Amino acid sequence: MEKYSNHFFIFARYLFKYQVNMSKSKVAILVVFLILAIDQVVKILVKTNMHLGEFKSVFGGWFMIHYIENPGMAFGLDIPGRFGKISLSLVRIVAIIAIIIYLRTLIQKNAKTSLIICISMILAGAIGNILDCSFYGLLFDKGTVYDPQIKDWIGYPGLATMNFKGYAPAFKGCVVDMLYFPLVEGTYPSWVPFKGGESFIFFRPIFNLADSAISVGVVIILIFQKRLFNNI
Image 1 (tube, rainbow, N blue to C red):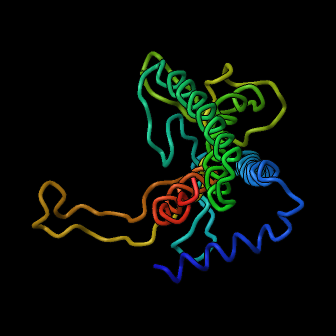
Image 2 (cartoon, rainbow, N blue to C red):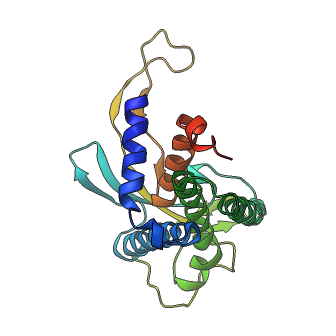
Image 3 (cartoon, rainbow, N blue to C red):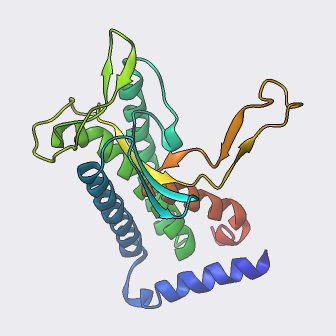
């Protein structure tokens, strides 16, 4: 573990070897900007060039681009109901404000650059997904919408266009997900309760770059927390 810890911190120092001339605030802004830019470019390209539900193989059968729209949380999780989306958006906004305040506090306390990078990754991921929810319903002409009669989300045919016609009010757009890693496919043994004989796929969730940034930032903090927080 110590070996991998050293590799991470060497990489962080290499990435920001000119940080003498770059404040930690600028490092945070740079990380957030880069992740957001890549995340949004990929989402817009997928949404405007792929049909909802379409697959494209990247590396064999274990890495695919699978375009879906997620009305809920990360990794395809959903909060059901008509007002679930607005509630989730409000929670996200509060979380983003809290992360910004915490990040500012860490910078004022001169926390390690590696920790600043991790928190910035989490912040960028949270902002990336709230941008989808807040503005995609206003920017694109097609998207997944909630039907109160059947109490479920309905997809759309054809390709979406970014023409500012809008398909939903603010905060009621859907998050674009596309990264799919069906690493292992098989069948549960007959002796497994409730699942015996059924097929399974690992890893089933479909996610995006913003989700990845959040996950990577959190995992790094959990693994190296003693080293990251030892000067705070």
